[in-house]
Length: 46
Image 1 (cartoon, rainbow, N blue to C red):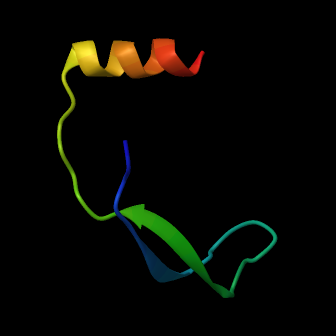
Image 2: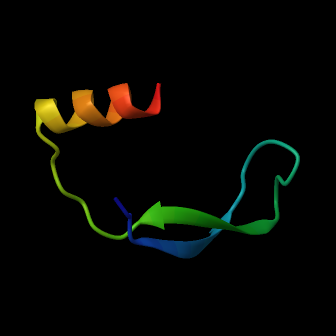
C-alpha cells in the first residue's frame, strides 16, 4: 500500500523552528477507508 504525498513549505509558529519556513509532508489524495481495511492494516502492523 502506498500513499501519495507532497511537500509544502510552511512557516512554523511554535517550537524549535519558530519563525522559520520548513517543509511539511501532506497527503495528496484523500480517500475514506472502510472500517474493515483499517482493522486489517492495524492488525498487520501490530
